[in-house]
Length: 215
Image 1 (spheres, helix red, strand yellow):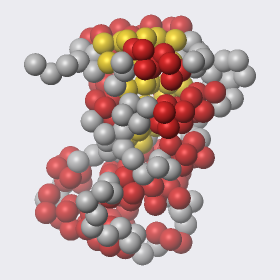
Image 2: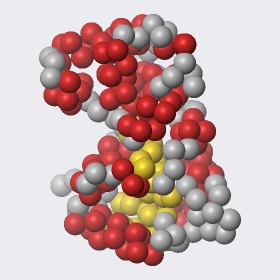
Image 3: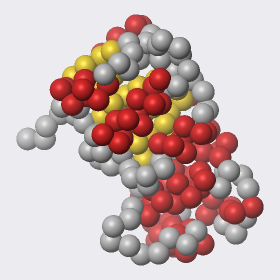
């Protein structure tokens, strides 16, 4: 029997925090901790045995970057724990930092643009499984610059969906094309971005990282 996903939630809004706890419960996840600040976050997450941490960017006491600094600390100290950031803002620098180590298990969604509760629970699952989940608006804000002029419009569409954490099959369904066509586009993207075959590197994450770093 599959063990339920264990989540630690860090959100200063009591109303949103309680709503997310109920949402995770309905999704079959275990909320192993729910906090209004990021104090002693690594110790809290380790003690809770969390699979994923869901947290805001701006938290007490200054409401500036406590959340993102805590997220980066978790990535550094507990590399097996996924991190899903929920923010009201498009913070491109933060997205760069979260992806800087080219590992999966990270997500960045905008609170006001979450279309459904299922979207949040699905993002938690994908982050737990080592995926990379980025809000489409965050991706679009970052998709500019000459480095990517060599990509075709279709390749840009495919790369944007990769950045959202979509599988090849899901991308094919969304673009109404065959999976084989998606695979060809993905291969072309990797080639144009100089991402060679590697047994150790997660090329989809590296592609997203390259996508972000060009801005």
